Length: 327
Length: 132
Image (tube, rainbow over all chains, first blue to last red; front, top):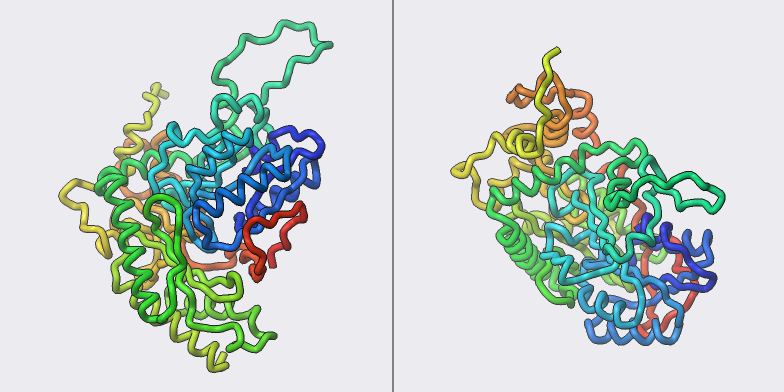
């Protein structure tokens, strides 16, 4: 996301559209680019969950009303809350409105089928260290061939950078290398490449254990069943996930109302729950969203229903402590 | 020193997966835990954030895939070795400590609480509130 947003050249007033639920680090990137270039950050407030039609309608009307939107940043699956977006439709709508699409697919590869040719985004990135099983720090960036000239440099700029010919430079330009643009990404500063070299092995491993379809089907199914275990024990609700296709992450509301916690202690609820679960040998994302506390769970091929029962019971125990004030 | 054949990706992958055979692949569920890098008593319900990466082989707490693949791709005297011991211990150690999936001080800043009650169709050019 940094490579793309910092690589583009913004005319004064050109806008970067982003949603309120953007991953905060990417949100900061948008703000920094707006601060350091002529770009303007266009913040679009959307409270999740939202139906695909409502999201698309709000997106289109915002782009049209604002005018001069150069690029829109959006997720495949939002981080918190973990819900799927109609990213396929958002990409198409961007194209129709003349807006570049920057798809943050952090939870995409290895989690859901990703046909980049069919999707045809302008830019799409996904880390591989979540759902593809490689070590942290491995990711890919897809830049549609038509846009490669827009992204002049890697971040940081390194050995492979090819400067534009200068008008004062009368030396003969070197022969054009059709792959020079891609090649510059193979040597960026002192990045340790070993994580990237794990990707082929991870893909081979995934094939060996049954293939992408089998992995994704199990992951999404156990996540759905696990979320239902949480919901039943909590006697609350699962946040609706729109978009097209299954997901392997769900958000379950915690059985804890805002007014049950003294105002001065509310900001500490999430860290108390997180730290307490850690001490019990598990981690379930707890977060505050739109005036309620939620938990987010993910499916994976090493999980069974009993893991979710254990996790839900541990979490519920600590929620009860918060409710009774014994924490 | 005799010239050595440059290793290719295919042999690197074969080396990384040399402990697996088709009849070994367990059913999905707890049988798959041995392929992932976390403690035996750790219940990981949050793959979406702290995803454990693969380990090579069984009963190993060291992340060996990167060092194995790297050492297979980068010429090194121990290339022919098929032992589980990584030729570059420092690489393995670094990865092991950095990638063990256990919540730690690596915890990123939590996203800002969103208590806004504004509805869709509203937008502005004002920046969002900074993360807490």
